Image (cartoon, rainbow, N blue to C red; front, side, top):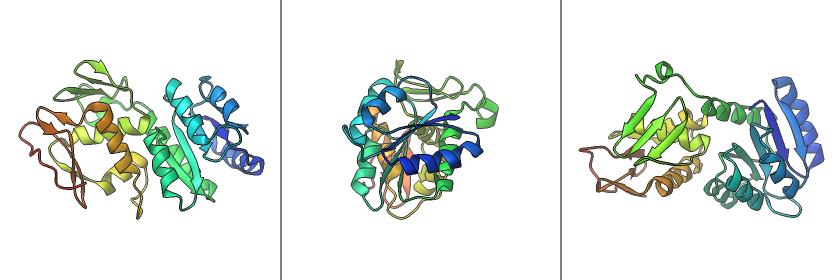
Length: 240
């Protein structure tokens, strides 16, 4: 995670980020077009990608699609401030987080640190689990190996999706608020109109299946948060 790839055609911004991130202990490589950025992102030489939406040649979205086809490397997308559509599309395509331009470099460092913590395997003792495994119905999550299976079949999740699923499984049958999920999974407080957690939940539903044992797998509790189904938990939907 200490090696960061920045894919952005704004050379001044790339230099600024390099100047700011290096004293924080990160090595930074800057690439100025999408095609080359994809090649470097899937090379395995980096721990995280900072990817701009607006790029010459292929767009940031196309670059993200190609990266996700080949790699689970964490990706933070840079979007235009106020462009909620770009943010949601990026998250739906597999970005771990987003940051609207212009931004304070300290905020980027905070986002990187949050993903860094999520990507590092935690000990079973740290997570309060005897074996390092969480098993709820057909899903098993191994916190040490950072693997997820559904009915024995591996499920590929991003670092953020993995952490989100872990929080939901630990509280299976109980409502977890969006604010708590944002704090624990994204490493920040829940801000108005931030749909990041909702989009990541939607992605989990698609990857794991919408139902388990006749119940809605991840149920929305309108205005509050989400509850992961377990034996005896109600299966009706309470809102979108």
